[in-house]
Length: 173
Image (cartoon, rainbow, N blue to C red):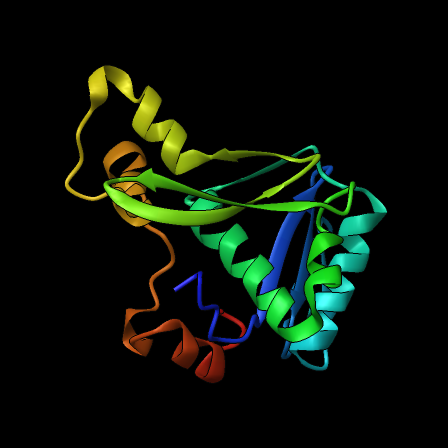
């Protein structure tokens, strides 16, 4: 639950100017020229290194699937829990976050407005602008990717959950 943010952040990936920046706890090898991996000692170190990179060049826009009501909410709540509110406010170029509550998909949800940065949530945009109000059985990213592109997300079903994947196959994680 993003409002509780109970589990530690073990990896963060962001793409900036065509280059991927990955922060993680654990080993990761790659040969990509468009990716920099920063191995962190623990969650606190990960958050600090991520925030330092983030603040070097604030993004204009945050995008992602369900990023507004999951990723941002989880990230802010976890940063507050681990590093304090002042650290979470560093996400904003104006050092200002605003808690917002709204009804979305018939459920009251909370998120944070990161002042100075726009959020384009692909889930919301897809639901609003898909041709003819195209209805889907599920709006999970894997289901939409299959319906639209006939492609699936990387499967980790044999690990049951992300925690086991992280512990047993960090490279795939």
